[in-house]
Length: 116
Image (cartoon, rainbow, N blue to C red; front, side, top):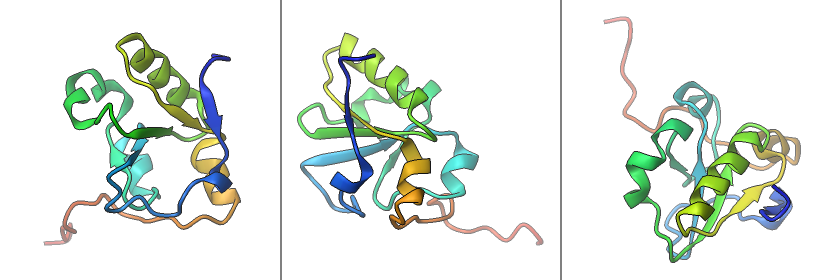
């Protein structure tokens, strides 16, 4: 795992919305995503990465985030084997929130009233 670059959250923009030169890939599960994620991030849970590779542009700067970095490192090892370069967000969402970086809540899907 030592050959994967780790980037501190303080070196990253607060919002990835509309960025064409970089992707923030969040590989956490749906419930984790809904409980707080980086604005503009691309959400693909770890298990879905192989089936959804076409959503990841290999020509952009790729940052991968999870809860604390473990899953990010696994995803980056897999991606490196198939020719993708990427960087791990050091400390994951724990570090992001510890440094007071903004977090967006919800699923990213239209809200549905569960009481109907």
